[in-house]
Length: 179
Image 1 (spheres, rainbow, N blue to C red):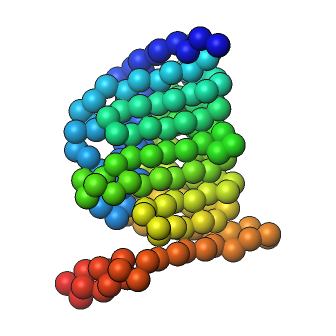
Image 2 (image 1 turned 120 degrees about the vertical axis):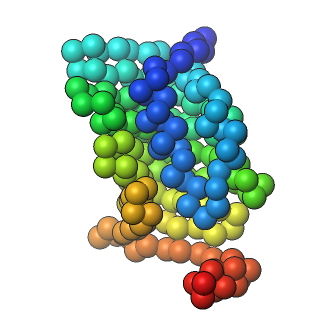
């Protein structure tokens, strides 16, 4: 199995950078990450010019600085309207990792990770979880709005939303709320 290296176009790079940025919901990401090139390694790539779609298949690894995403499939969908790209990563699960400025990692995973650049919305679907240190949010769907800085997690008919905090992190949240 030979891995091939591909570099994403400027508009796709913008979409990927923006989608990865939002994971830093508790602290900021390593600033240097977003100045690094984005590299996509995959076993196969298909381009559908008519649909304005690039899809990477099998053993997909996206890296940019400390950011690392893994998926079975990654589609980057463009549109006529600039800034309206959509990225969809699928896997069992698709994963995301980034080291934050605090030196603490943040990790996310779901069977599908979808980012809509126009609405600035990230949606983790099916077995979704977002983890920072030992704190964890799990649900069937986690949706995060970048511009509103709002997160919604929901369960389904078989599961509820679970959130786990460390006592230390609860103490850190209380002084911030008093400001």
